[in-house]
Length: 298
Image 1 (cartoon, rainbow, N blue to C red):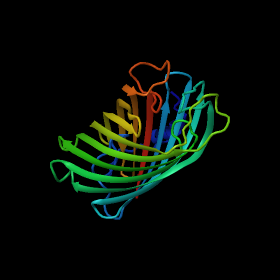
Image 2 (cartoon, rainbow, N blue to C red):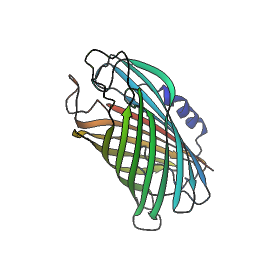
Image 3 (cartoon, rainbow, N blue to C red):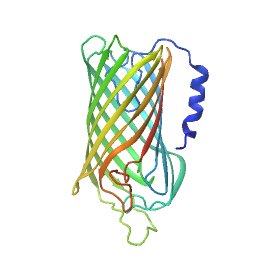
Image 4 (spheres, one colour):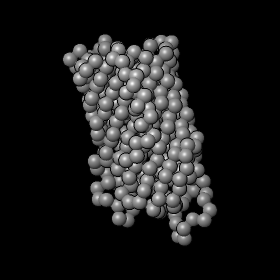
């Protein structure tokens, strides 16, 4: 797995790490989210770098970048907005309807996202933390092939969070439903007989996630998280499902924090290409995902 997109940031973290107190809305996990919101009037800047690699044959590496700003409108309501970039490198992959051939490019604008998060119960004050989110995302690139594709997504989510042993052990659980309306752009010079539909697509995705993290030193947490995702498409029914799981490492100081997560696809099913590994879904997903998250508090 290529670690170059995150190596510079990790080096900076190693040089600057000073064990101070953690911020209220630090992200202990790379994918699973807690229920806490920002304090009123405070800002937080996020930088996410996610690398998706290995489709079981050929070469595939996609890198997603998200730069996001969050603002605590009230103690319970947090608003956020972010810009997305994408880079891609593929070779020796041809998947009918999804990957029309080799493609490689550096960073390109890939879309934007806006979100509102409302806290109902606080994990610090109540037995169980509870929040809800609504997120609108618009993508301009297909995340699999890098070809032009307009996709608008609306997601409704729920976040649970529980502290144990005075916060030394933290559990979080998520559930979400996402609706997508998408349409691909036409491509010239396609391989003979290659399917590339430009008809509108409507998809419904269900997401479940859980994570457990333990504070083993001041400012440091180690744990694991797992994700289940399934997608249904008009005219197809259940198109795919996957289960990912893996370790996560988190560090927080007073002014910034970082989280590093590696997830491996443990199981998957649905649409498949000829010759792909068994019991996996590797058309829209990959074997591995590596995510680095940095947060800066203001």
